[in-house]
Amino acid sequence: MKRGNQTYDDVLIRMLDTIAVGEKEREQGVVFLYEVPILDEIKKLKNPIPLKIVIDENNSLILVNNGYSILVVCSNLVEGLQEAALQFADDFMNYTDNSLPMTQDARELGEKLRGSVWL
Image (cartoon, rainbow, N blue to C red; front, top):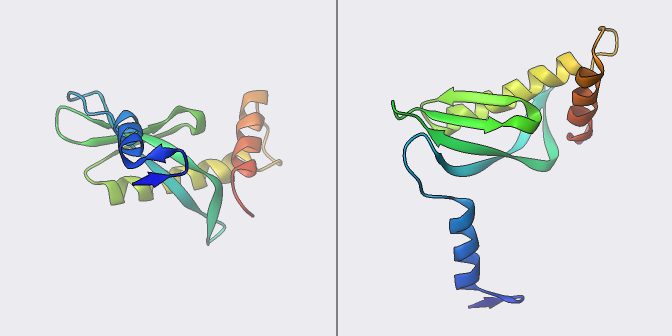
């Protein structure tokens, strides 16, 4: 099956590159965060946020995105995605409040968070 300039096999190979199969405590794949709760409403993200999946020695899932300072330890993906969305929302509320004194790095994170959400 051909789609554009890619065959189905080309797409599968790219997917396998994205979802790396590895040993425990190594990246096992990636999931994406598409929406977050902001001010009691579910807001869509302008671009999905990738969360790397790592499985630790206790078979817990660890979801990580360093760019948005998201770190979640969970027992399943549904719980993990919910917690990641709540972490994003908490950071959004904390780092976009101009009435609070912040470092330059904190302000930049707030701008990044604000610019990531369709308000």
